Length: 169
Image 1 (tube, rainbow, N blue to C red):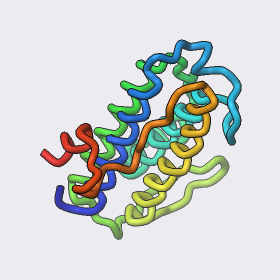
Image 2 (cartoon, rainbow, N blue to C red; image 1 turned 180 degrees about the vertical axis):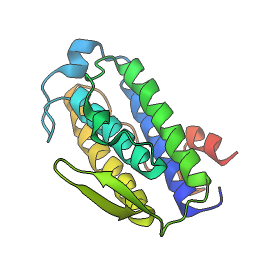
Image 3 (cartoon, rainbow, N blue to C red; image 1 turned 60 degrees about the horizontal axis):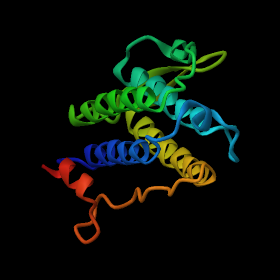
């Protein structure tokens, strides 16, 4: 792992993988059940994380999809959404590993206007967005009667999770 953004993108992938492993046993009814939080269900919270990832990754890659990434039905199957999130996490880590120009400015389509943002601002924003909503998912996982997983055992040698070790190759 060479740059802090690569490290953070891999930590992000690890945290999402760990979270999805913790909720793998949830059936669709429990996954979509009303839960406390900003979004009304664990499904909606995790779909929000996924679609915002798609939105910002597309902007940084200059893919041209813009807000069209939101024109999708929620994925209500835990395994299917986990697989989709893993693909987005790989795209994000690959983008970070490409040594992007942090000063490069890209278009970001908002609801009624096009804005311009530096890659160096979009990267930490996307990472913070993930952490913010995974914290909300933690509460919803507990409300579902499951034990929320430990998600911060990635960087330090002392407490590094065996799963996290895989990302340090």
